[in-house]
Amino acid sequence: MRLVRPRGAQPAVRDPEEVVRFPELATLSAAARPDDLESALAVGTGLARVGDEHSYFYYDFLRTQLHEKIRIELEEHMLKLNLTDHIPDRFTQPIEDAAKARGELTGAIRCLLAVLEQRDLDITQERRAAIESCKDRDQVLTWTVLAATAITAAEVFGED
Image 1: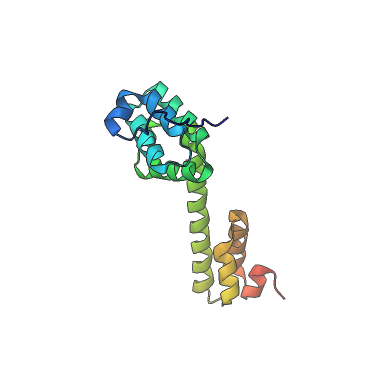
Image 2: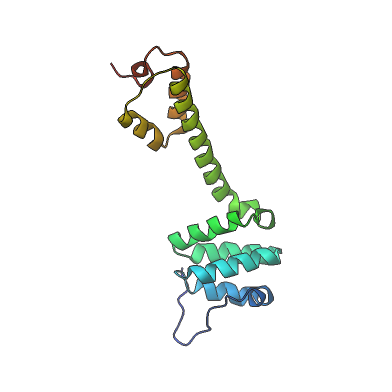
């Protein structure tokens, strides 16, 4: 259930000191504005500054009330602030896992391209684009293992 801000309701709480002094009110204010990134950022950052059990609960509640795009931007902002030591893993672990997986995939793709280049296994621009857009880390690792011993790029990618 999403909160809906009724007409004439409390204005947005964005002042960091107000967020710290009244975390419950600030959380409800931001949750009632699920498309308001500025409020979400102010409240999320303020709740992390408070750092107690209640603020973690409020932060989790706020995240569930935001529209997906705003929630994702808030989570990315919180990670950039390096405040993850103030927010329990149960709230940030999915975000951190996704970021780690993206990093591992990017590294695996770079490794594959480096092996192909080092071994002078020519690949087409189309194949390079397919490698760079691949979302399956296991597939990239399989190609890398094959690239280590293949005679041709066609062998790596199962092309005749």
